[in-house]
Length: 266
Image (cartoon, rainbow, N blue to C red; front, top):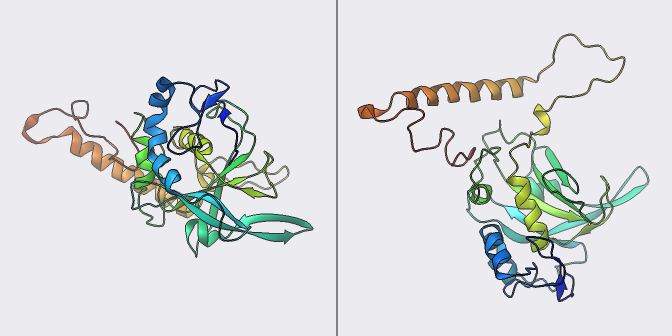
């Protein structure tokens, strides 16, 4: 973490702002900005303040953020980023099992530039999660729900274990890992509060030029997941359209059509 006593305000980017007195990481130019940011900042401020940031277990350990699916609060952890060699390129990367568990694939969302961030970051933040979390019975993430609960909206239904870690620089494949701090935390929260995220396995895929295309190829796993989601949605809609005692309806219900964790509709 930088030793600078003043920095850009975490909420409004106003320069020469003092640090948060509790976590000593984020910057705020005024009490007003601190209050505005507190619903998000307050989720991890106590965890960062209590975390021993002086030094990791080894020089290859870096501070990361873990999102346990069964707990309401994420937490800072040390994660081991080993040096690897591939096709003449040397780089650091955490073990997949340390990120999302063993026996599964991993998907990464790299944050360094985009409409949801509204600025160019100086370094990359990587969000890692199971590539099959929506179809392998992974549990809905309570720790992500604690973020989306701070702002009304409709969000992607995150499931399973999720880990965020940092990389130095802003290219797709950076070589060095780095520590995350509370300033990174704000951009991670912005990502999870974005309603436009679409997992890789259901994004439209570009077909290489000259490749043969016999109709539209959809994996059975994705198709099965979509059918289950549609079936559940239809059943839920029917149950809400016929409430007990004749009170309300789909538009009159006070509960969320999609539940409290899978997708927030507050």
